[in-house]
Length: 270
Image (cartoon, rainbow, N blue to C red; front, side, top):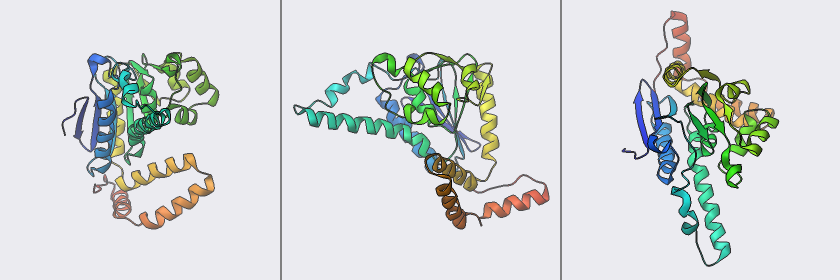
């Protein structure tokens, strides 16, 4: 489909979803929110897609929410009854959360490649990804506190599960900038690259390595990791036992074992 705010391509089983409002530092307006949900639903449902790379065009990955675009939210939820107005606002927030949750719901691994600014709602977006990579000069800021609001689209729920609790609190309480190098040290990003070109080349290579693995096993692995994050060890072990009772004896397993014995690359169906 045609996107107004994204550039989406597919090559060698890798879907590349690029934020494409470079003149606005890729700030998220209402159209981009909805197109992100659409694009990741497409990536999830398209068998040829085995891995997704999320990046931004221009000088910045994403400068957060487009405040001008969302200035009319109060009018959108207006109602003479205060309770109905607040119920509409709750539904609006839940819908925005769902747009970000679409990234996490995607059964394929999602790799974020970040450069320049990664601010505010951009943190919500990238914490939904499986892995994060950045340039050394990228900077991160949970900016919501500086505009007088509590972050409500996922940062406060996901960030403390990715980095030490005290560091997460420092970032969300102060809104300070954190460099790409510091983000790597605390585990928010897996690796830093010298510049945007090297970043995309490096992330695409990692994506290619992932794309060569069994798609069925990869989808199961992501499912188990997400489930384990939110459940006990005992619950996770019980779930994987049930999952593999259904999924283990697959064509992918046979192909992987045969390819290993024949010392050749495995070839998996989508």
